Image 1: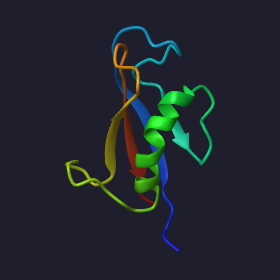
Image 2 (image 1 turned 90 degrees about the horizontal axis):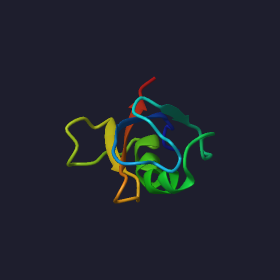
Image 3 (image 1 turned 90 degrees about the vertical axis):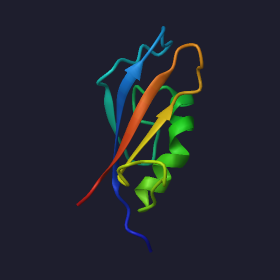
Length: 88
């Protein structure tokens, strides 16, 4: 079985008015459930990529294999999330 890593999610940019009032600097540790205080739409957007990082995968377009950036699905008020794999 593949090793499972913890993922730290941090808001690195926010424009417009987020209906969940997310702000730059907020962060969560992913543990398999929607983290308390995180918009479920944003969680649904980041979850597929978070799973890739959790199980050791990476994205060829990212400079750092331990990092991935995802934008929430609200195009008028985008919140940008950086996910970082925490190495043990």
